[in-house]
Length: 251
Image 1 (cartoon, rainbow, N blue to C red):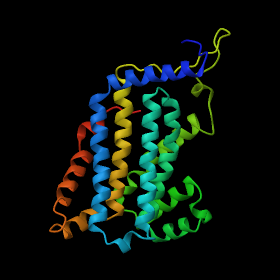
Image 2 (spheres, one colour):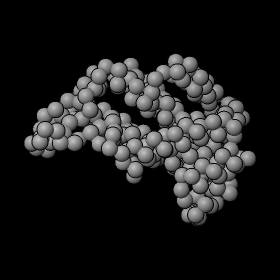
Image 3 (cartoon, helix red, strand yellow):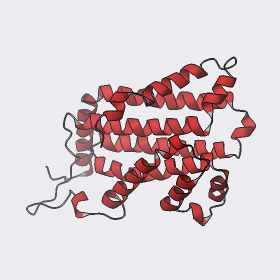
Image 4 (cartoon, one colour):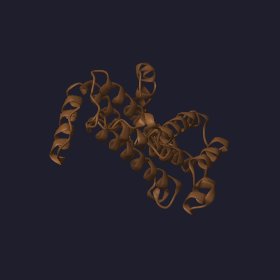
């Protein structure tokens, strides 16, 4: 690992990491693009089949905002990852988990929405929101299946990469009297595993958005005025039920 002598040097190293990442990740990058396309199309679809009054100052408006920020977090992870800073990207799993969990609680439970809207203490931490979502009769069983995954993301990110920093997570220690700074080396299997992780995170955002917006029902009821709604649902289901995606190694 070279000693970094200037800002231009570290920028060059990250550019090299990015080029190597992109050169070996195109198949998985295509899958990420497919899922993001679902998110964009679903946002448009929700707007097409939902009366405007129901998206103004409502749970749905809040949920869309939170989920959009969750998607932004995944893109931040992607940018850090392709630049070689995967450790830093993993720290954002904590933020993603908080956002998606809050979107589930707020999107399905009116009481949670009111408490969140007014910044009440019972919606002020991951653990509190988790308990609210887990015990809520308004949150569907399918969405509750996501909760343990989000908790695992949050714990792993918090304990290893965030406020409880462990020695094992610090890899820029001086060695033999010299200081080295360099993005993680990208091996052939790493880009695919990273992108599979981000793809699945994006797909979770899409799933929650479809649920909190009640899109399948609305799309069916609006099938004459919005005929592509059913095909959009089929695309979402095809990705969600892809067995290869479900069993693929992730990080």
